[in-house]
Image 1 (cartoon, rainbow, N blue to C red):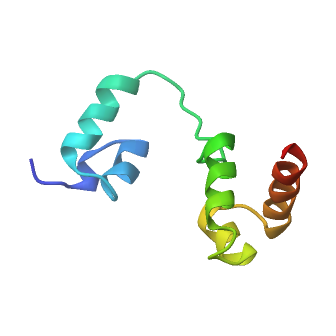
Image 2: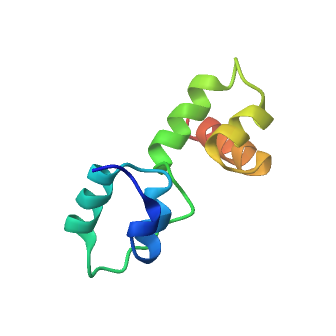
Length: 86
């Protein structure tokens, strides 16, 4: 199947702009009829903390914030929380 976003209805057409037909069919089979909400946060709290700790010496707070989709203030808060636990 060749990918053609216009063949799909609604959100499936939007997905077809970034995914291939096989992936869209997998999503449809698994989630059709279900309301799905995508949280603002992509990564788990544990992964976020681990990533920040691992990169605090080789990346700036600004770079980490951009990479993780968080504010610089939130990165500093997480660093403070982690340091208080140690």
